[in-house]
Length: 230
Image (cartoon, rainbow, N blue to C red; front, side, top):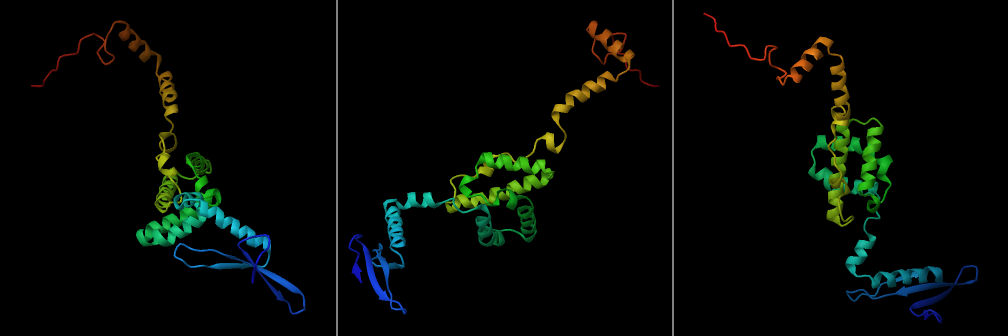
């Protein structure tokens, strides 16, 4: 094995193949912090140079910067399966596991499962919530799905995969427009009920208001005295 004449740090070894032709292998050696000197051998010079370039680039990064650069590239579906084994099956009850698995398979995999964790931000979460509602998913299932993913991302933050939890930043509780009827329709409904009142009732209330009387006051202007029985 001899050093490559044009690429320092690359060792070349020639060998003969069974058919009599000559081949070469290229070896990269480096020193680890613990003093060991591992090596990696490649069949082509290009692969050896690429490997050396990657190691040199990684060495220039500080450990914390390198961790942050590599973090978040895992897709949600891969992280979820890891989280499921390491955290969910250990910490959650069987009934909760059953609910979470159904929610994950029904609502999450096809919509955001293939996205890298670092790409899932508050805007993506809001769009995801809207897609669930547009697809006819019930409000209760939407809230449970959002709560499940918030728990997943809580552990992703703890593992250093992401810097923040986007599901914590987005409101999970649904407004009355989804859960209990639209508040925007309440005023028109009250107006419609007012239009259905008989004309004589509107006339009486209008006359009382013109004279400054309370709407519940009797027509004579004074409340009748309470008459007790014998």
